[in-house]
Length: 489
Ligand SMILES: Cc1cc2nc3c(=O)[nH]c(=O)nc-3n(C[C@H](O)[C@H](O)[C@H](O)COP(=O)(O)OP(=O)(O)OC[C@H]3O[C@@H](n4cnc5c(N)ncnc54)[C@H](O)[C@@H]3O)c2cc1C
Image 1 (tube, rainbow, N blue to C red):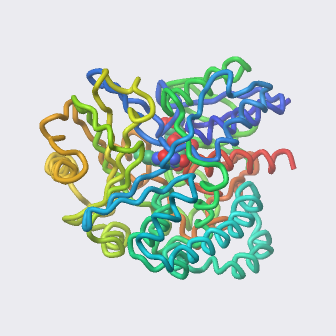
Image 2: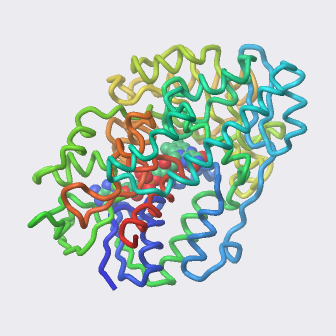
Image 3: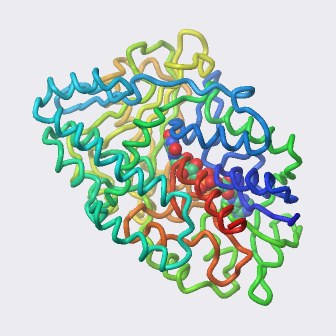
């Protein structure tokens, strides 16, 4: 039995704590906030409940595994409800709708009515993304990438699958209709990447969704966090809330101690960091030597986009709105260039709209709806004064929704508030206020990402969005599997 400390209680830290406890270790998790979940916070305003972060559950098997590792069954505590459609796309420029979901016949019929030639193209694309899934997910997602040789070993496979292409270029090689090209290429945005520069390896997300489906956790992601927290406590994982680490101390190439802002110090045998690796290099290890690899990432890594999230309730129900709606604005490639490359806040935008009350009425008073509208925006490298512009930006987004899919929402909405990239930086300690840590470029994936085991301090490990395999719940939960494979080869 070893004494293992986890720093940060996001999904990466939670999964690491459970995996380490399952090996019989004495596990303590330190979290700076008074709740677990990291980005998966829950806000309550005027009778409306909002999950602040992740809402789309893919690869539910990963959560079943966490319960099973401690000898329990997820279904005794949680219900994952299958969604249909998974996402409804609304193209604001031509007012058309495309339902992306589990029923292939319905989807093929819609593709046929838009562009008959794309039916065959879609089926070929699905096969190709399944091949990518076999490599990218089944072989690489839980594979440690600390050694360059591992990257060299898999490079021929990545080249054979043309991983150097972007997701958009992959999709466009099979599909012609512009709306369908958008619908099938947006997945990188869910993990912080621009579809025009993210490696086509991330097209595996399409196959992953097709394989396991998309679910909503009844009670919300907050309920999922609560049940994982209870699971941890039932199995004697020690959770220390309000422990904000300000320094990691090292001696003789080993991490020895963490000190916290409340004045406490804790000695550590092994430390698994769920705090963002760039934060660890810049601040927590700021007075210590940092590996060349992490110094390079700290200085040169490209971070994901920022997110502007508007939370609101509506006094009436919008019964025709799906659980997840993707509202596409007039521009795609150019808008993404503004956001990712030029850090420019454009006049137009696209929106992801979450309506949990579609599946779970407990999120709002009866006959009312709870919503969040998430808009990809430049991260703080854009230098925008979010406190000054947030009201105007909120009004613009609400007007766009009012003009299109949520008529009269301006009159019917209440308890509106928002989160800007500044809040992401302050609340989640995210470098540049980015939504998803460093971007999932090929040059920032696998070996090129922060290694799950530190190059200098061999008892220091990393889990979470900034390390391999990357952001999104499946990514960060798999990062804990990677650390487990390193500690227990
Ligand atoms: C708005 C939004 C919507 C999303 N939607 C989805 C979705 O639908 N599906 C999906 O799969 N993914 C989604 N994602 C992505 C997913 O939520 C994240 O990739 C994932 O939750 C990140 O988990 P993590 O463990 O890396 O870190 P985090 O959630 O960032 O947790 C890190 C934890 O470390 C703690 N910490 C940091 N510094 C310190 C310190 N110095 N001392 C102590 N503790 C510290 C933080 O307080 C935090 O609790 C979404 C993300 C956002 C922001």
